[in-house]
Amino acid sequence: MHTNSTFFLQTGHTQSPLLYLAPMEDITDPSFRFIAKEYGADVLITEFISSDELVANIARTSKKFTIFEHERPVGIQIYGHKKDAMVYAAQLVADANPDFIDINWGCPMKKIVKRFAGAGMLRNLPLMLEITEAVVKSVSIPVTVKTRLGWDENSIVIHQLTPQLQNTGIKALTVHARTREQLYSGNADWNHLRMLKENKSIQIPIIGNGDIIDEISAYNLLNYSKVDALMIGRASIGKPWIFKHIRHFLDTGTLLPAPDTKERVDLCIRHLQKAIEWKGEQRAVHEMRKQYLKYFKELPDFQSIKKLLVTEENPLHLIRTLQILAEMHDNFIYSA
Ligand SMILES: Cc1cc2nc3c(=O)[nH]c(=O)nc-3n(C[C@H](O)[C@H](O)[C@H](O)COP(=O)(O)O)c2cc1C
Image (cartoon, rainbow, N blue to C red; front, top):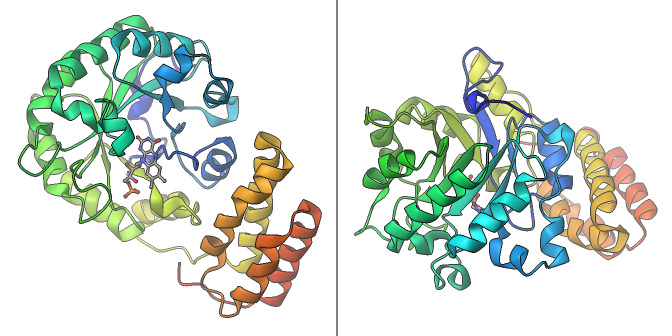
């Protein structure tokens, strides 16, 4: 475990900042985190974990905070709206020895915000600050926060909120540059990230998130806002090499070619095998089905082989089908 929180800024790279894999429910389980790490994600975070469900000792929820040595630095993300439950959850997950705990004050889902959890807490800042401070004080490892700009465009609170969050003792702040009302639509407004970095009273690292889709957008966000680190979510699904490609671009100014079919197939097979280790054969086979289209969507005649991939139950047959796909399309050139 890291004994201090400087890893939030240490890159091991001369020019470019840390690249975080965004926490994503039902996506960033250990199998996807393994693949993302292999392809250059510097910091991993679990999907969000309900503090209320941890209090209720629900086995399925407790499994979500399993982390592995190869993942470090890795954070466990918790959410909730009750101070006692959040403190309990923080202490419980701290025993799993993550490098940090991340508090989710940004989830926009209706069922979450209606109970003032996630982004719902953007409408109750005093309670957000009280819970954050209680969590910080309850554990000896670094605590970070991930949030949005505000509830809606008429209540952008991030500029007053960030210094207050800093005072609670958090070690870094991720800002998804959208409001709760935007959900995932419209554009992330990177102006706010830039304004946060221009505010000299803010010392904690700001991790910029929202709409990084490739090397160029990563460069643009970094260059425009000067955030300390970048977090990438949706663009990594079906394109986990995005981390390696962004790192390469930031370091050299040149673009790497998109992986060929063989590399994608090898990656899919490893992803499937890791998923089987994590959730068992049947669930892994079923949940991987949505991934294939993302990995191979550019292939001209993918529809016919897709049918085989999404109906096959036997992992060995699946692997064979994927290998045939690699043989059939060894010369295909992908754009991304
Ligand atoms: C399927 C999905 C699940 C998500 N789950 C979480 C989550 O568990 N915790 C969280 O903080 N954000 C979650 N998010 C939000 C992402 O972490 C990220 O903030 C958002 O997608 C914007 O970044 P992007 O433009 O790089 O995707 C989720 C997003 C998606 C698309």
